[in-house]
View 1 (cartoon, one colour):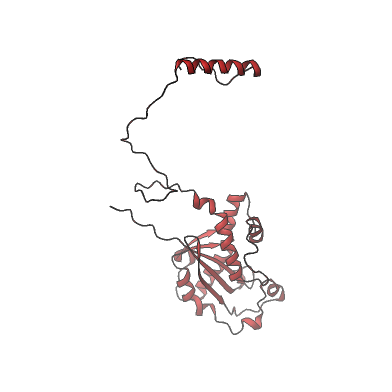
View 2: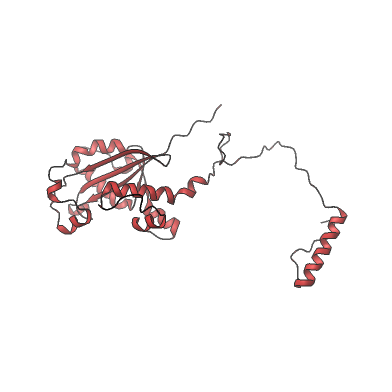
Length: 244
């Protein structure tokens, strides 16, 4: 019986821009950017939406993401893009930097639609690269730091800041940051899948390995060599006796 083929891993790297830092204070999402990877490779599929937050932003916030109140005024409401957004991320592993922030806003927006939409963790799993950076590098790191650390900061043009741009950059960071985990295959599968990186277990019914013992001449040469080592250094770690 052939081993069942593993399902391709679908990742969706996600970033959002918002009107502030706390949805409980009425802040909303104004932009969503998503980049799809299958088995850690870019597929070219993305999801991007600007959203009218129905919230007047102060200039301090506008300076961060560059999206003005006037620009967002004719954009769709979150309720109008919710279904297509859910369809894009459904069943994927979301990769987000500081996931608590983005997921908190997403869940708030889902609830605001008043249509009984599921919460993020009911739609897909979530990986927080802020936590991953802590595990890999000994402390939580910013996206800018990680991009420079892994040498991918020039792969994306960040002249203009935005959710889709940051999602693309995070995707490159994630691939590099987890590259070792991908190459270290600790699978203990019983079937030989042909994967050269997989661990191969020896047959328990194999013939016993032949034990080749040193000859008397080889043992004597070993003792003489140790005597030379001890004479020059004053000690030796190998103090074997003949026949051992």
